[in-house]
Amino acid sequence: MEKHCVKNYYIISDEEKDRNYETAQEIKRYLEKHEKCAKIEKVSAPEGREDWADMAVVLGGDGFMIQAAKRFAGRDVPILGVNFGTLGFLTEVERPKIRKALDSILAGRFEVEKRMALSGVVRGDTCGEDASLAVNEFIIGKQNFGRMITTRVYVDDELLDTYVADAILVSTPTGSTAYNLSAAGPVLAPGMEAMIITPVCPHSLNKRSLVVSAGAELRIEVGRTKEQYRDEAAVRGDGKFLWTVSTGDTIWIRRAETTFDMVSLGDVSFFEKMRSKLNRD
Figure 1 (cartoon, rainbow, N blue to C red):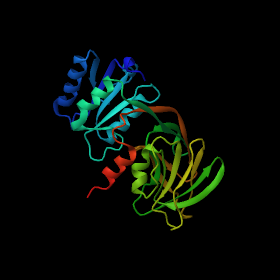
Figure 2 (figure 1 turned 90 degrees about the vertical axis):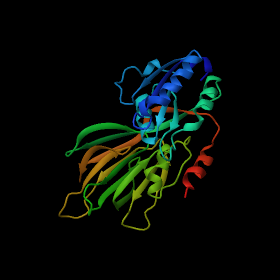
Figure 3 (figure 1 turned 90 degrees about the horizontal axis):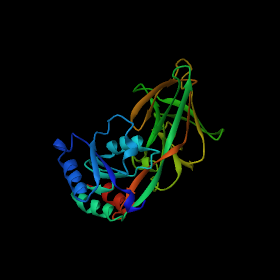
Figure 4 (figure 1 turned 135 degrees about the horizontal axis):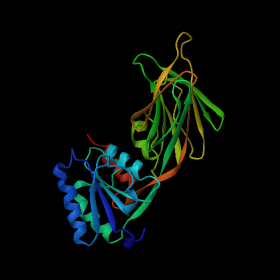
């Protein structure tokens, strides 16, 4: 993106962490001082005005970034994330370095990374038919504390494996540092295009994560762990509950047609961020 294109900025702030929008107001004044247009909005603001902005500056943690990524997905509005949270894998800038980051943006010293998202479609007697978008991951997990679920996972109509586990997780490279990492899945560089299939607490020790092509279509069928019971599971996208499914229901997951754009300033590499954030005491 050329620097003359970045005229209009949305500043989206986490009102719980940015008290009275103090930091958002400071950014707004700084941009206006440099003859830019800036508006402060909540991430939950009604949709329909996204195309006004050339860039979104998002103040918050990774959860806030996920909401913003979904809001601006497919709109060619790159997101600059400013970390107000704890880990902040999705954010580009730490809070004390906001002014330096804005100077780089104003001078055109930045790149735009396109990140893949996931499209999930569910069909079944329990849930009907519906679709959703995920930035980090979809999880098909057990509903009851004491019961595992059985799922059959197909990759392009070929059976990959049958899993008896607490859950099956399908992650993007961006989401590989989230729940997938906690479940001992592999970390992928965010610019890759692939999907990670990770069983969560599998009943068998030889069940491991698998990385498949971003062009693959996954079909996940809910099976039956015990003959006398129907398996019941909850499907979540990026931690948000989406659907209840049970034995016989099917979830399709594939790469979404839309992408979301992230601003990269090049100051801190992904690997440096990994070392910094994962080696904390």
